[in-house]
Image (tube, rainbow, N blue to C red):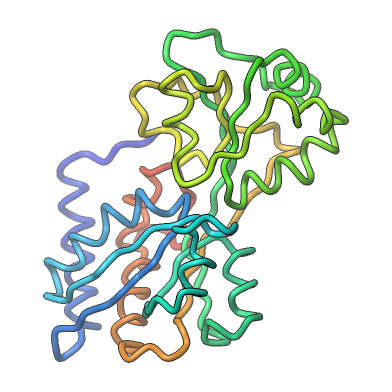
Length: 264
């Protein structure tokens, strides 16, 4: 994975600050954001830079994009929690948009993500180089963990049936609620772990195996949208312009995502 040299990092930061000065708000704002899944690592890197450059405060919350877990985004909206901006996978975002919880037409695509596979460090890496090899590796695994968000839904409802192993996976595969799949694999509670690449590569206790074969890969867009009733819509839009700026594209790329913007 490409790593920026210090000089290039400075150039990115300076370009970003210049962009912020051109498009900055006239007053300090407080922005409440809830985010999910693969964009989280990029988000955590970018928020402090944004706050330092603008003086705005970003209050961050995290939760699964789908499901009924207490900390999932749908559950938090159902409880009436207030947010200004949401960032999550396109499926979850569009569902909330249809429910009228988000501002129509405010969606901004930030990055693309793919599903990867990881094992506990030091254990044998399975062969996932082809669809048939992936199928056999899944059948050979004593335990498989997948996320409760968009990638896990794809695996359980589309990929496993497509491979003809849905029944077998009901025995050995488990949906992981309220924590990252990497944590489950790292402590030895699952042999194979499937989740967005950006959510696996930061676990030092894991060996990253690779991404799913192209023909069965699911590319997911992670996008932002304004929340209905927000009193900080202008500030939220400003934050989104920053997240989608070409100036931060390399930082996003370093977290295992494909940014929608290209670097200047």
